[in-house]
Amino acid sequence: TVFKKYMGNRDEVVAKIETVENSLNGPLYAEVIEFSSLKQVLKSSQRISCRNLLLIYSLLILSGRFETTKFTEIKSELLVEFEDMVHKAPDSRQKVVSLLFLSDHYHFNGDIELASKSIFHATSISYALGLHQTPSKLWTMLLFYDSMICSIIGRPTSIHKAKGHDIQELCEGFGAIAMLVRDTNDVILEFQNKNWLSRVIDLDEKYNEMIQ
Image (cartoon, rainbow, N blue to C red; front, side, top):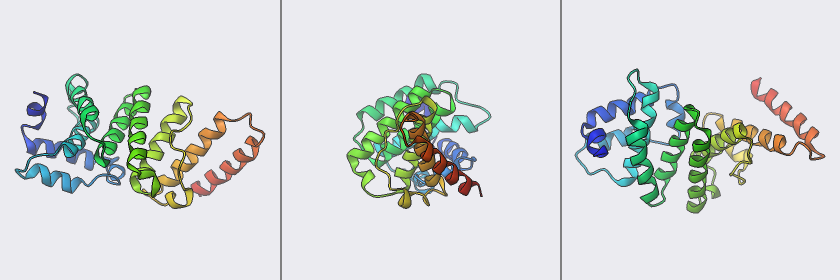
């Protein structure tokens, strides 16, 4: 089975997770996942929960990007197994994070439609769990990825509840970037609005402030 093939050697799984953790994207991923806790679960003999398995599978999928020898069967086996698990697993924070990573995987590989579907799924679950009610690093990361992907495909963002002053300082400044990208996308989609010029000028000033 896929589980035995990819999870049979836990030390190897830990090594692949560390590949993601030590990558350039590692600090960004670490905003929403505790690598040390997940590796501790793998190093122990305890049974792996469905929630943790979702995270592990999503990290295995991401690891192919950062390894010199990539998984050749990721899309045909691991991705299929992972997506089947996502549909069957109960909603949870871990499920949201794993879908966020899946969206990042699809985005990196140029599958923008699949990236959009994954981030929309993650956002829908987040609303159901009430994650939008309190600013957090996970909600900030969702806003960042949702804004970025929607700006690429020219669609309205799926996150409408975001308190800019609470989010801007989260995730090493990515909160501020996320708000700017979302606002920019909104202006582009509504450029015929009579207030579009003033909004463009305001955004230009904000970009200049960020650069400085």
